[in-house]
Amino acid sequence: MRRGRLLRAAMAAGFAFLWAPILLLVAYAFSGARIPFTWGGFSLRWFAALAANDRLVEAALLSLRVAAGAASLAVLIGGAAGWALARCGRFRGRALFGALIGAPLVLPEVVTGLSLLLLFVVLEGLTGWPQGRGATTVLLAHATLGAAFVAVVVQARLAEADRSLEEAAMDLGATPFTAFRTVTLPLIAPALAAGWLLAFTLSLDDLVIASFVSGPAGTTLPMVLFSMLRLGLTPEVNALGAVVVLGVGVVLALVALLLRPRRG
Amino acid sequence: MRGRALVLAPAWAWLLLFVAAPAGILVAIALAEPDSGLPPFRLAWSGAGFAPLVEDAYYLDALLAALRVAGMTAALCLLLAYPLAIGIARAAPGRRVLLLAALMLPFWTGFLLRVGAWIGLLRDQGWINGALQGLGLTAAPLPLLYTEGAMLAGMVHAYLPFAVLPLFAALLRLDPALIEAAEDLGARPFTAFLTVTLPLTAPAAAAGFLLVFIPAAGEFVIPELMGPPEAQLVGRVLWQEFFQNRDWPVAAALALALLVLLLAPLRLFQRLEARR
Figure (tube, each protein chain N blue to C red):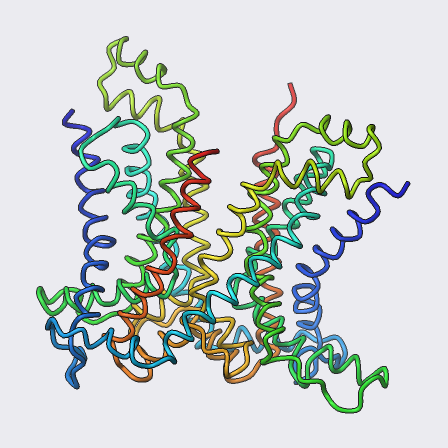
């Protein structure tokens, strides 16, 4: 019976390390105490404080808008790029194309953020656009980051899908566009949905790139959180953590329900 | 063929504008001269951004310290990742999904919120010090936050799934009969792990190591919020040069130096991926 006991203990330790900080963060969201992570009796006052914190709520709404826009744009660009890599054969400049689409996956965030900011500054100097920096520049930067992830997911999906399906459609008289719309698109739809979700969460979670490319009018939620953490923790952070964990849990449960294999 | 061009052209345009051009501009500004104007640089072939990197050991130390911390983070991640990956791979399919969700859910709760949780645990008025003093084990708060240990805990917590997932994928492909054979022949579980599992999953372990190492080398947030003040890693130094000193050429030169140092690990990672 020795077999597996060591493994199980190490595994439990790993999960405890991952989960303990998050569970405590959520548990103390319900404490009335002024000092975070101390117990002052059950209370929902920090959720009320969170809802009344205009700066935070505004930043959260902006973050959600930017993330939705960036993810949608990322699906368009990354979907096109992933399709090109999987279905266009050895087109001219394919190696460069692949390197460029994948670069944001491997570059450190500080490098991506700084180089995109420099681009926006130089572009504004040359063409007058973008006028200053804010939500739009953050959206464009996040779309570039998200497109890299979408391209990987879409390319992988197309690589394992049978190409003869599209060829059969065209042999039967479908135009390439009809074949794409009726065969390829349904085939990659799950990959596009997964890619959108991935790009959306990446955008919501990003502090570093946003800090570089944003301006006074584009304060995202991570930027507000970062300054709250730097200046001193408040129990509002706990309350926000509880809201996010609950939200993520609900979304995951919904996805699991939708993807559950149906019987019969 | 026209349809193909219609898809390729906008994708090319986007990539050239938002990935290739910024890289070129980064090089140009690393070579530019700092200026008091707005934006604070003047294009020139001056190498002003690189000069401090060569002359002042502070910058070289920042690069080396970042590589050291990233290496320690990646090694610790692997150490924790092996039992997690083996446990998840051996679980029954239904349980496996739940365990994978349990691995990824902390990852989706938000990077800064997790850092906030660690700060709440580790700081002087934090949960751990509160518990220790409540139990009468310590009289004064232990300095836990703003230490190298706190920084490493935060980094490992942030990057652990990156190390687990490639290992998990490799373990699923590993034939369990190999381990059973080793154990039938008298090997103890740990010996079987060392002589069978470890060598067969070494490429995946290397990929997981690099998946943690590469982003960790440029990490800014965790050293800034949890690390000791003397942990001047390159991500932090770059940030200060840019936002506080407004020395854009030096920041750009530091970014390029970090990229050059990461080229070898990046190449290695691509080779490992190509072999799979």
